[in-house]
Structures are given as structure tokens and as C-alpha cells.
Image 1: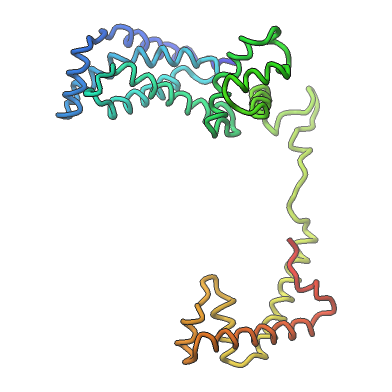
Image 2: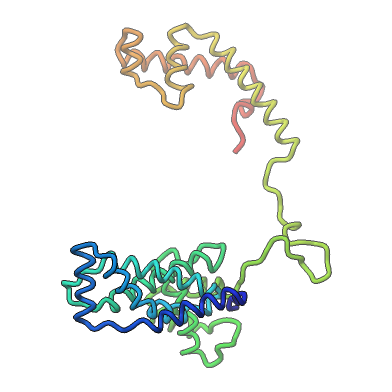
Length: 295
């Protein structure tokens, strides 16, 4: 569904469109001179004249994309951004008309805006998806005998996939995206009813009972670990604390320098300490599964 602007916005858009159409067309030589002055001397007056002369190109491109349900004024603004980007990057020495170069930047800016705002779900994140988004309706109307049908025929899906060099599964996926509009979770399930769609969403969070049990188990495991650490020698506790109980654990070499031993000796002490901790923790529980954290 196309967006309908309020009267004030419509008047502002119409004023801009009329002003754009009144701008004189540039000859190739004058366009080249303006681009050279801007690129080589930073002449802002030349830049403004060059850009104003091609705002009509922005308006024409925006009109092509107005059926995507977005405000015409926003499309024009995005196109103007693309036009400015084209002016900043244009190289007149390549002997290409500025309008030809700018058309790509204008179209790209508008397409990116449409993909960002057409749906709250990201659409067109790959080149194939982008091509499908902007060409699927056109190709469907071209090849299907009944374009009003609810879904593409298998043959139509195959022909579109071949035309755009994409997988048929991509065509089917994009077809479903374009057919399904965004819907608020607060909208009613049925007309006149009190139930909303969000009422049927399951809560994936742990129940209050699970939260309390998890807190109790966590405190219990912490107490067991503290008691097991108390059975280690001071040097073993230092190694475990520095190597296993820190996010940025110390290396064997670093601990070796601190303790005055080789890193191989630190590794041996760490292994022995871990075995002691394991044996100590097992003695404290009836079921070893109690030591494991639930996923």
C-alpha cells in the first residue's frame, strides 16, 4: 500500500518537484567545467549548480519506487544524499556524463533506504535477495498468466530463478516475505475479540521455581568449591586462582617466574591441584550430576 502524505507535506514535495523541473539542463561542456571546478578548486558554487541541475533525476527515480509504501519526500531525501555522494566521487576526466554516473548512486541510495524501512525484518541482505526484492513483482507480472494468483507456479518460480541467476528456494522465500506484511503483536486475533497475538507467545524464561533452585544450587556449589580450595597448599591455590578463576588467566611461564619454578613444574602442580579439587568435590555430593550446570 502506497504511503499518503498529509496536505502540508504534499505541498512541500510539490514545491520541490516544481523547482527541480525549472532547473536548466546542462550542456556536456558546461557540466564538465562545473565538475572540474569543484574537483580541482573546491568551488562550492559549481557544486551547487551541478547538483541542482540533476535533482530532476532524483524526483524521477523516486517516482519509480513510490509503490513500496514509503513517503515520497523520504525517497527524494535519500536520492539527494546519493546525488551528493556522486558529486563527491565524480571524475570528469573519464568522459562520462554526470547524469549517467549519478543515476547509479541515486538508485542505490533509495534501494538501501527501502530495504531498511520496508519491513522491521531485514530484507535483501545479499545481492541475490536485493535483486529478487526489486525484480520479483515485475518478472512475475511478465511471465505469469494469472499474476493475481496467491503463489507462483513451479514453472514461474523456475523461470525467475534462471532470469536472476538465483536458487528457486530464494525465489520462494522472497515471495513469502513480500506477501506477508508486518503485524503488531498487540493487534487482536479476531475482530471484536479481546485476545491479542502476544497472548499466545510462550515465555521461554525460567520459571520462578527454577530461578530459586538455580540460586540455591549456585550458592551450594560455591561453598563446595571454597571448601575444596581450602584443602590445597598455598602454592596450589595460587596456581588455580591465577589460571582457572580469572577471565584473563596467567600463563605457565608467568606463574613460573612468580613462584620461582619452571613452567613445566607449574603445569604439574596445576594438574595435581585439579585432581585434588575433583576428588574433594566428589566426596561432597551423592550424584556427580549435581556438579554440572544445566544448559
